[in-house]
Image (cartoon, rainbow over all chains, first blue to last red; front, side, top):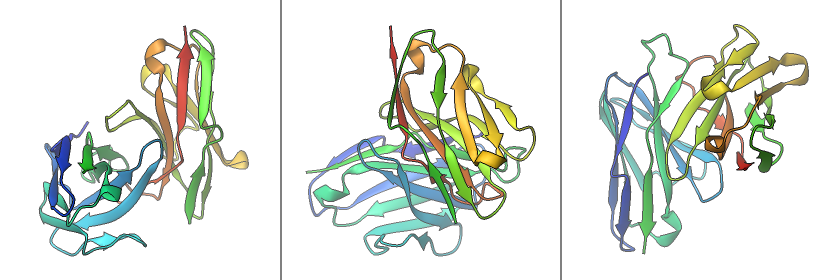
Length: 118
Length: 114
């Protein structure tokens, strides 16, 4: 199957700083990528849909100025958490569909990024 | 609108016993349904998916699920639990194509007792 990577896998930062998380589709092109957030012992909640070459679509309640998404190429989407606060500490997971493959109806997930804000 | 309900946030079974994880869905369009497994501090791994073909779907690691439209269910089963099956399991529903985002259930933590 298709492979999605995320970097970094784990990051610890001070309150007020910004953190960038990368999501890459390694062996396919992704015009769309999804960003999810998962709090401890909870399910995944969709934050935004990242669209290559255009603005991201944010879910209700997600601050677009705080969670900046850039999908500059067909293989890379970035999520920047600006002015991070302890309540932003979470597990961030990206996913992408490979619409050109036989598994076009399947999302491929990255391994996740654990963000801890001190 | 689409949603998924997973009954039972925790399920414990003995090693070798039947595993049954429940999932009911709600969808205004013909659904695509998925089961994912998540090990601690890792991303999600697809176990199996239903995409309007056979209603009994076989996945990896001996898991299978049956789509029952009349019951709006997609329960996950495995005949004999193994210690390595201990993990968090998520049921999810999406629209017709993968370009639609997934709606996840709240997850079920499976514990396997030796």
